[in-house]
Image 1: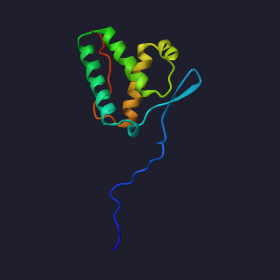
Image 2: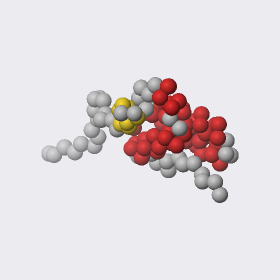
Image 3: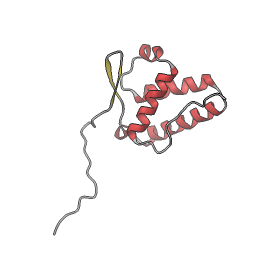
Image 4: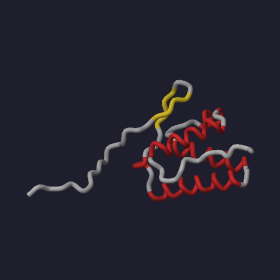
Length: 113
């Protein structure tokens, strides 16, 4: 009788997507890296960002964006984070959400009317 594999798991480290900042490659976390707690926290941060965006609370948006980027990019030094403007940080978050197949739409900043 033939067997049907329902699920295939591995304990090996996943292949990671990378971003390049000033000629240095930084790995992004993968979906498999996120436990239930981290996935829920990341989704919560996205919702908090959207709320701060709707309220035009730029300081809160910047702080949330920093937390998200530090949680996404493995080994990113704080001094490199400080050199990135918010647009670049937003691009990192958008690349991550696209890579991991985030259900929610990637975050974006509203365009002033």
